[in-house]
Image (cartoon, rainbow, N blue to C red; front, side):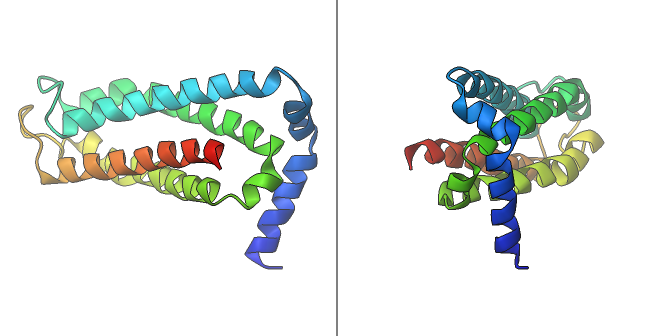
Length: 166
């Protein structure tokens, strides 16, 4: 069984599941779930932006990067969890359609890369204070981590928006 066949089988399962039917056949459930998805995306984007602005030395320069990252961590992980769960419910209502959607595939690639980067390299830089120089300017590692983070999360948002256009 190829990866493509396995992925298509998963899409068919999600599409025919009770939650796939429920979201797809309800007048209000899809927009209700989408509200939570977009609010979580906004919250996640805000927390990432706050830390990245600090790593770039643009804002919050009086606070150490590690303290700022620690303060927003619960909001970041909570909003990511809500975004992933609500995203799965939205996906399940049109999963067979999404299987053939290039913007959806691009969004999933960006999302996977963004999550991996955020919770490995970005986190390591932010929590170690390698992203700061005694609270003043961010060194190169911090700036690079911030730029990569912003590119990846922006890619998630743009590709997600492109799904609605196609």
